Image 1 (spheres, rainbow, N blue to C red):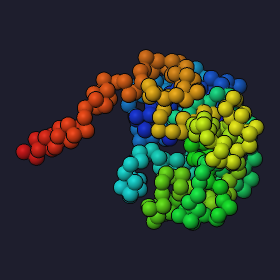
Image 2 (image 1 turned 90 degrees about the vertical axis):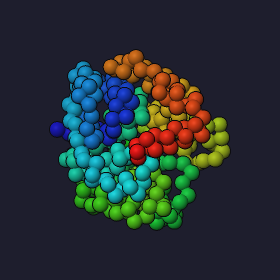
Image 3 (image 1 turned 135 degrees about the horizontal axis):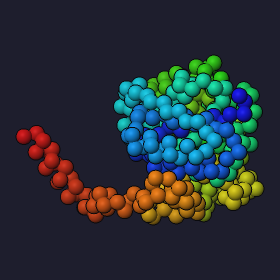
Image 4 (image 1 turned 30 degrees about the horizontal axis):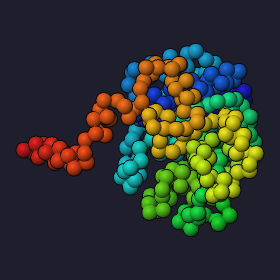
Length: 305
């Protein structure tokens, strides 16, 4: 069954809306492929399952939900409380899924073309096919060779057979636990530290990062050729909304913001509005910081009485 394309997403309940947009974009632009989709989460509501099923029922794909216990990540989550536990889910892929290779995608992406050429890449002895994250210079901290490149883990074509054979997952988790001060992005830093440059670079169009649209990008970084940058800007296959500002924020100015809303309109979330314009978030944004503190301390006092 080599003609099956295996794809895995890791998500949490706060990202289901965005996952649905990603799913529609993937399936709509790859109707000629037979796709097995795995979704790793700690569980979701019946409504969320229904919303996802409604999408996948319309395409040539099979879907498998993998529910995992957050307790597996108790130590990691305490060490890095600012990251959602979902960040670590992709480290479990070798244990949960039995295929030779699999394409991992973050939920804050839109697929804008065929992924067949990407999926057909020969992995050889490489752990992953990925895209370089520009501006990395913390080789010492992550105990990496100075010549090793650092990749973005939001899109990875994973050599699952090699991950399993080498026990990569345990090594990565051990590194994260033992070197908390060196970790900026938990699984991404951990994976790069252990893989240490043994990964294959694929064209930037397969993980178009938001930073390439900043005015001085080409002056600061030289990891992509002019032609590769041009292609990624004009004909991206996978758009990854990598900055803190996302298409579901009203102030976001990403040139491909409209594609997120285009595919979202093809889901049960078609009537969604900007998350920062939802009443509760608006209320939070207009309450002064010192008043917020007063309200919090008042609530604490009430709870302790």
